[in-house]
Image 1 (cartoon, rainbow, N blue to C red):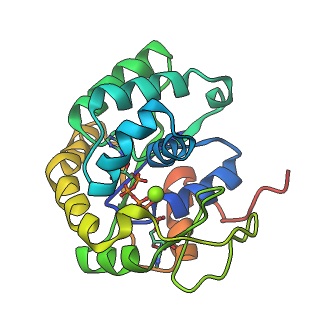
Image 2 (image 1 turned 90 degrees about the vertical axis):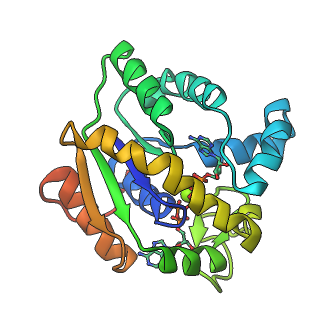
Amino acid sequence: MNLVLYGAPGSGKGTQANMLRDHFGIPHIATGDMLRAEIQAGTPLGQKAQPILAAGHYVSDDIMIGMIRNRLRRPDCEPGFIMDGFPRTVPQAEALDLLMGELEKRFDRVIYLKVDVDELLHRLSGRLVCPTCQRTYPPATAACAADGSELVQREDDKPEAVKPRIEIYLEKTVPVLDHYRGGGLVSEIDGRGTIDEISLQILTAVNGSATPTRRTA
Ligand code: AP5
Ligand code: MG
């Protein structure tokens, strides 16, 4: 099962990817999380990426495509994967098509989480993140449910970065959807319901019929 989660900043990609990872037992490949891990580790890539993320801009296509080429070749991707935050530009989508061909894989579905801008701004202004495992939580959540870490605000959720993130999404990432619509791969999900309601809609789109029960193994 190879899936792309597509949507604006704050649309719920990370939230729903956690559910899909638990449900299908396949890795969640989140380019934003990968970049934040590089920043936390202080690597040369992290040092280069830090001011770009803080300003709400995009890291270059070359860097991002190289990162995904390495990640998709790892053996844990063999049974499938959930892509979150990539592709984000048309050149990234074209490079991913080539890579999927080389790997003899294809996407089963592109899930588009459609949320209006007012709701995105509301969600991002209050979002909390676990600095250890990167799970995201709504405002006023006390601690990470998975590892107990104290939650923090993401640097790019500060008001000065949120507006450029949404603007660059509208300019560079919206055209990516058209890239996939032609292949009939896109399922558009109304992102306004509760997290569980949206999970159910996603599983229905992916499976035809399914319940959002968690894997136990
Ligand atoms: P990335 O980390 O991918 O950020 P993003 O796309 O801006 O998306 P977010 O993670 O902010 O939102 P989300 O959709 O995951 O929402 P979430 O589930 O957290 O990228 C960060 C940066 O890295 C980019 O700006 C760029 O600089 C760089 N980058 C990454 N990939 C790149 C690439 N390919 N090319 C170039 N640069 C790249 O939910 C948000 C909040 O809403 C949470 O609090 C959640 O609890 C809440 N919520 C979720 N669902 C609901 C619901 N149904 N109802 C109410 N609240 C909800
Ligand atoms: Mg996310």
